[in-house]
Length: 143
Image (cartoon, rainbow, N blue to C red; front, side, top):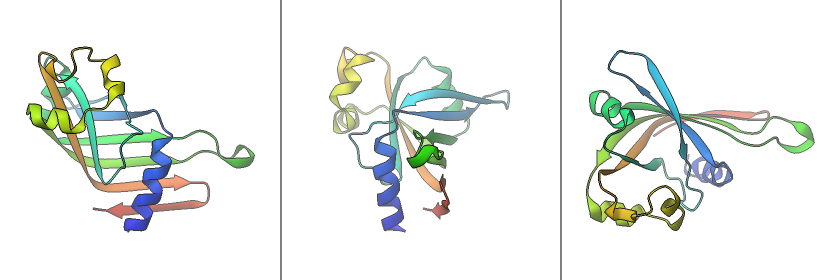
């Protein structure tokens, strides 16, 4: 399993964005693009920054079950790229030490005040299950 997770991590590095899906208070699904930080080795935890005033934070506070979906560029000979679906449990973190531990320079684009951004929230999405399809290779991991 660790080998498969390491292989997925390598492939995920090349994917710029993931769609983060939450369930709203009204019970419908809401998805939005979030930066998939290619500088971080994926170990089953995904980290995203947002601000307190977003509907995403309210959704997670009500229901921490989230989904992440990623799709890569086309493969060799025009074959479809990799597709990854992650079922995860999200945690809202408001601790500045954690902000600093997971901050990367590229985040300055969205948060020019860095870890001092008012209302900053760090979302940790811990994978429970990962399904992937990569050409003829497909599988599922339970973490």
